[in-house]
Image (cartoon, rainbow, N blue to C red; front, side, top):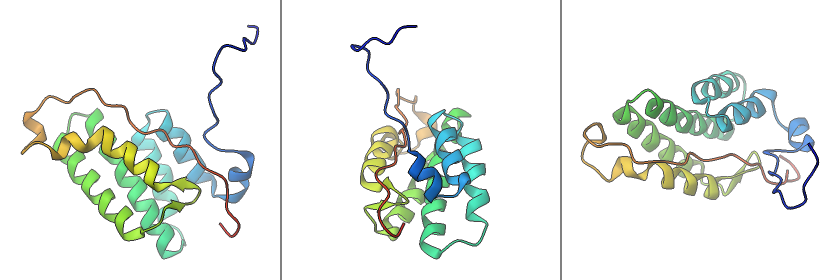
Length: 148
């Protein structure tokens, strides 16, 4: 296939610099998450979370795990459980209180989460509501900052 300059080229999710800066489980989780493999992304991040990581990294990873599990629950038709995971992830991101962590723009990521999942909070019981079409977030890492 010949390259066509009018065809858009998708931005990479991360760079070689990210691969060198972060644990492979973090990067693998991003690949799995962006492929819609939310349970597998959870497993990759959980492996890292269970290891020796700093408290803020542990909180971040737990929030990411819970956000992935929210989408997994939607895949298996468990919107009540998805709502619980979404709320738990929001609470952890709020406690983390950072704009960017491990090169992820948390404001942007949470905006995408809210666009996809806020319907879970707009009804008394999401199990009694038909799921609207949603667009799950895509994780793109931003520039690695000095000291990360």
